[in-house]
Image 1 (cartoon, rainbow, N blue to C red):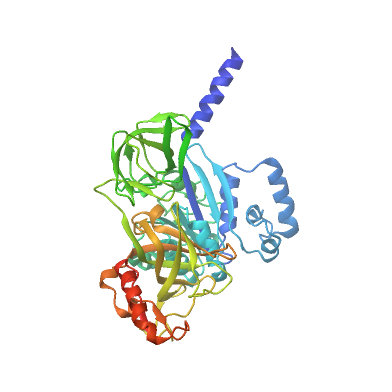
Image 2: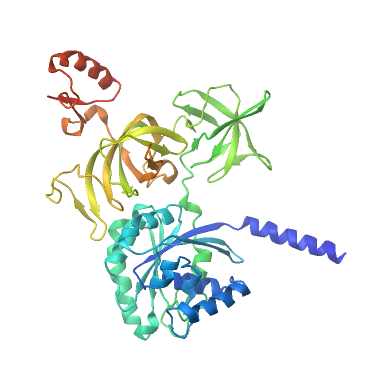
Length: 487
């Protein structure tokens, strides 16, 4: 009987653990602000470190730690030899842990400007960002840069962790000054939820338990806040988008379309439209491994069957007939260059957006962004000699992109799943860039300056054949592929 009760208890525990929601978060900050130390302390104080890990941590702290007589909790995250030698974070380190209320995946991202791409990678799936500042230094250039990158990624929840409060005698005045300056900076970036917490990662103040050394702070300690912050509304439940990943046909009696619900809610009986064909049908069933559902929502992976036999393939999308995404081959986006190789404006890339794959070209660089000052650098304001200056590693720019076939997308701030994409080098297969779509380009009102230029002489074409070429280009123009000629 006791064994049966134990079995029931274990099953109940596992069922409860399965129902916990997941919070993905990243940490960012300047060198020595204490990012890795904070996460290590969070794991240690919440009793999420195994005994053998603790023994190894104490041994390594004495041998190569940078925390004096204290345990160097940063060694839990900084696993690379170069990181331990220099006492800095270079690559993204992921750590998983859970409490009684929530599961967490933490991405410890590097603070150096030359590792901007690492931070973008770590933050691409995050719901929340913890940005650390040294209480002695306050808001500095790196703080602004990281906050800008967080806003670019569409992260809605930010915690400003004012660390090393023990080195300023837990001064309320110092904390209030930093918090006020940061809130003034964040306001134009449009981040909806900003919280400031005074703490000492090394000594544990306000990390898991409220500290008696900050009686003036009335807010929650960090872990308590992370356990209770509401992220349910971060998903777009309004615009139904279902990119088809796979057509499931196990036998002649079943034909379903598998994929992940990118946004919105779908119910049995709903009328849906297939893009790009425009054909409509009704949802017959919503199938999962555990059985059928009455409805599905993001980020669930399901298989939809339809009442009618309509042709739908991988890369196409199911939407509501009265709520469609943007459809087009031209759009503007914020692009983060990830490749060691400098951008070649003449190169054609693969673009991966939702489950769609196409060829794409970067037609024009509107402006680059100085990530330290957030200043726009363009030919128009005299900050760049040429707006087409190619992008280099870790640079960010607003660009115009043209694809070989139509894509179905939403602006990134509205729908992250359908507004994000990657550019892939067709030769090396490296991820050359990641991007966030801003808006569609209206090709009907495109000016000459917006059009890519084809030079006849550069292509080795005799100008006497210009008339025939122009006839062909008029046909391209009719299809939305406008270009102009030069001699």
